[in-house]
Amino acid sequence: MKWVSVNNGTSGENFELWKDDTTKLADISFTKGTRIARFVSNLTKRLFFFEKRNWFSRQAVIKNEYGIKMGNVEELKAGAGKGFVELDGQKYFFVYNNSGELELYDEMMQKSLLQCSFNAVATGFNKTKSLLDSKFPSLLMVLCWYVLQPHSANTAADIAA
Image (cartoon, rainbow, N blue to C red; front, side, top):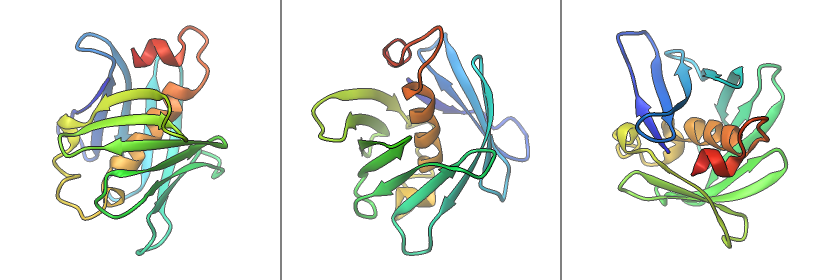
């Protein structure tokens, strides 16, 4: 899977999630100047709100359209590229390397759950001290929410494959 930036003259930032070069899974668009994202896939349309706890926090939070907390991303150390994603009461460990590749594991790092390339959108991530100062936590949370939820026609393994 991979994230691709598709800013086509709009006032916000737009990204697409691709399974491979021929199968687009979803679109996400961020309203400029806000931490609101609109998510559209063949399964659903959703609205997400993102916030960083405070200036010194290493945690970003995702809320649904009703303001209910769905989960959070926590970076172990600023710039480390490692941390935890908590979503729907489950905890996952992520590793993001400088080449723009992300791997998500179960909490104990015993099983790889998904891999995703952030190469096409990583230029902004590399300029910040912390991944939480970029769109990375938002894209990561939406990716995890989308892939790890039960799907009627697809399983997480089918999407991640």
